Length: 261
Ligand SMILES: [Zn+2]
Image (tube, rainbow, N blue to C red):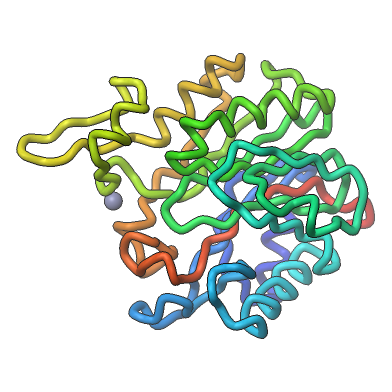
């Protein structure tokens, strides 16, 4: 069974499914039909990046309807590249509880927790046995700052076992395009940095996140990366490097299916 497939057929939400067990669904939105040179054009539900409220609100309503939940069950933190994790254990969520956090954990049914990105790495985690899911915004700052470690620790406190966690890495800026300065490169494990001739170093964020997950006890074989680069595909995904930071965002989320579906 697939909640997404049914829903996509009746709505226009552009979704890439990352995981669907019937119990847990993870996906990312993409721009969909859009004017490539208009940085806000396309599906984006982020409320704090300068987009028109009527646009992000409508997109949020459409996603909620697609998932069969009300819009306030779509939990959208205001991210700040921090390493802070919020636990959602009651709904509706007070927006102050998800202001300045970059990962959200929940064990509630029918609540979609997600993160907005445009090049940063969205990581979705679940332990289906324990019924705990999590969305993580892992840009370079959050990654070196410990957001992935904190997210796993928070899931474990909520009842998950690291060995039972599965991880899904959504589209983000690939090593092909993630050129950084030496001051950023030196914060990463040397094996996660690529030096090309006569070029600045490139960071492999996906490799860095996988390394951290494995160090926390998540089995390597449980982790998958869809492998698309947002900057190479800025026609399809929002990319801050391609479009500027004043642009829309891709929303990557995970949800335990609502009981009534
Ligand atoms: Zn690329």
